[in-house]
Image 1 (tube, rainbow, N blue to C red):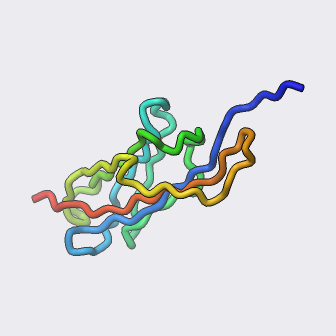
Image 2 (spheres, helix red, strand yellow; image 1 turned 90 degrees about the vertical axis):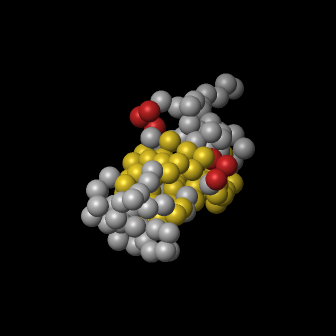
Amino acid sequence: MTEYGQPHANYKVLGEVKDPDGKPIEGIRVVVDPGSAHPDYFKDTLYTDAKGQFQKDQLKYSWPDEFKDGQVKFEDVDGADNGSFKTKELKASDLSVKQDKKGDNRWYDGDFTITANTQLEKDE
């Protein structure tokens, strides 16, 4: 019997963005990019809430190479409304990737959580 399928995994991302004083920053654009092997339409865009937090439970990205050359980019896009901050990028090696659920050793590699916490520098 021949089986056809595509390896996949489920990924979610979450994190928190703070200023140099440890206060949460609202309105920061967070772009999750799974890396060079994937087209631009696999990028997910989120925004921090009043607590400086962001979360998406099902990323567009689903290939089980564990986010090897991915990155998360943080951009201040609301002007001076919540302060002005410099753009920052976290590479895959700066992120925490944890497997939450094991796969079935066939096509499904499991569930993963990518955690991207950071502190942004003020842009004077």
